[in-house]
Amino acid sequence: MKTKAFIFDLDGVIVDTAKYHFLAWQKVANSLGINFTHEDNELLKGVSRVRSLEIILGLGENVDITEEKKNELLIKKNEDYLVYIDKMDDSEILPGVMNVLDFLKANNQPIILGSASKNARPILEKVNILHYFDDIVDGNDVTNAKPDPEVFLVGAKKANQSAENSIVFEDSVAGIEAANIAGMTSIGIGEASVLNEAKYNFNNFKEITEDFLNELINK
Ligand code: BG6
Ligand code: MG
Image 1 (cartoon, helix red, strand yellow):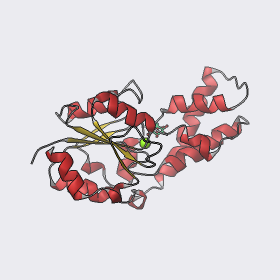
Image 2 (cartoon, rainbow, N blue to C red):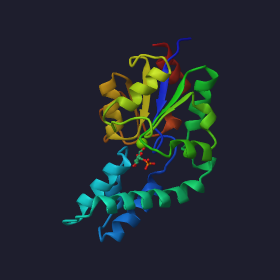
Image 3 (tube, helix red, strand yellow):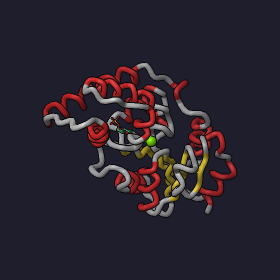
Image 4 (cartoon, protein in one colour):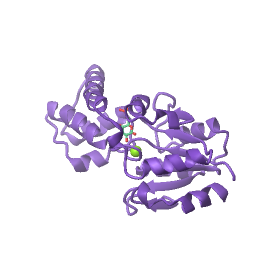
């Protein structure tokens, strides 16, 4: 059997943390008199914390705040987000994820995390799967946010695999773009019409069969 690098995004792929990001950002938006909806939240998927705040400020009308105030809001948002994270457990792992992780582990395939989040480690610890990962590349390790391919290229390097031999699971348009730019096999998890640039599409991990994983490993 061959060896490939399997790189997983975290938010929206392994766990549904978008709902917690939403609640924490909504509080920030409301404190500034900005209306922030679930639809707006879609714009923040895969986007860094700092960039997310800029997008939210752009939703308001002529919101002009100081750098100091921006930093305060970023700290506050993360504090609120961490209160939700602290209550997470393994019941929040998305359907089918464990089967895929177990299959890859049983077949000695490198499992890497490639996430924009600076909270990746505590989240993986909370849901009890940190030990599945051979390496973690997160928002603390890279300077360029997706769609820049940096996070995935660093991940492949840690697994000693070429980009060609790397497979990326992503739920965001920016993440699929990053994987494609890197020259990796991109797998979209979610709406195929949204993630239409992905090489393969699945609604969730329950749809991913062992035959399909074997094909990826041995091609
Ligand atoms: C991405 C999420 O994975 O991480 C974004 O999709 C989030 O919504 C980004 O803003 C940064 O996360 P964190 O945990 O560092 O604020
Ligand atoms: Mg994501």
